[in-house]
Image (cartoon, rainbow, N blue to C red; front, side, top):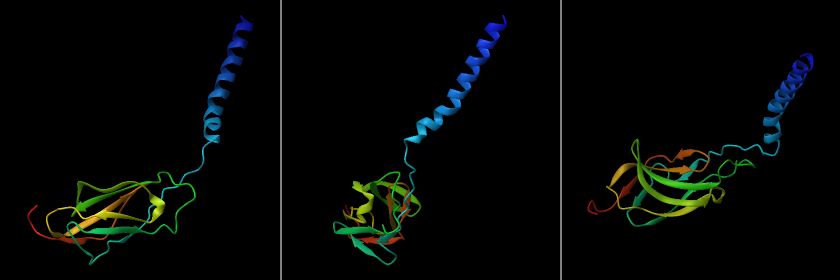
Amino acid sequence: MFVKAALALVLLASWVQLALGAPTALLAGLEKRDVFVPPVLYPHAGTVWTKGQRHNVTWDTSSAPVNITNKVGTILLRKGDLATPLVLASGFDILLGRIEVTVPWVIPDSDYSVVLFGDSGNFSPEFTINGPAVF
């Protein structure tokens, strides 16, 4: 009986040691990664885009960390406080610092912004899109 209890205790201690050491072993091979939130430089407040034109959306990459969580960028159009389903660009390297987009055919207004996604979302200041009101 004593042998069974001792064996059970040894097995339990081994299991606990393995369980506590496993996360450390799994994490040992991972690099530390940082979130990168580059500020959008263009478009800026006062910018006016016209439907159908092409423009470079630009952002500051000077403070990019070495290990970025997600380097794949996406740019969406936002109107006021609402996200739109309009993807202006996607699948680009967030470290490029710029990407050319075509201004979509939307209702002319002065409360548009672009949202730059990679690690996180960063908004441009609001700007204007003008052009004919018809689609």
